[in-house]
Length: 185
Image (tube, rainbow, N blue to C red; front, side, top):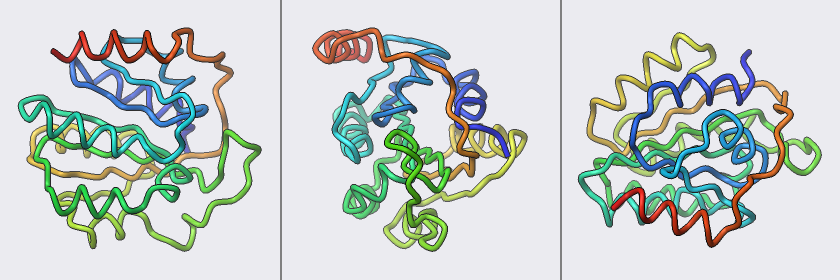
């Protein structure tokens, strides 16, 4: 199984100017190390809020495709947002969930994603396209396909627990916000 950073790198090769909201903890650190872009909104703290912020951006910018990078632990913290996304059905919303079955940023305590199939929850909540992938080839294929379709879509990516050696995000939250807002205008 690939690491989250490997999966993220594969997706970032396919993303051009789309806004990307990245959940807090190691996912933001890894994305920052792989490809720091003004169109990336790195969550600093605020566990579970990346899809809510992504939803707001998608609704405010309906002509821009909005991508959320999330984790299973983060998603479990904010499950209500799945229902809101499903009810509002933003066509420009792609929710990528990297599922390693642990709270990796706090010491690898187990989540419950091994017994709660998050992709099925998203489908039941009203996401239009939902896929679960294990390897890089399927990841790339399904993500490219979702980029062509109206959503909301969820791509659940099973990854291992390996964490990339990545330092903290180099930007302060006000700077992240300012450059992101400028980039998506």
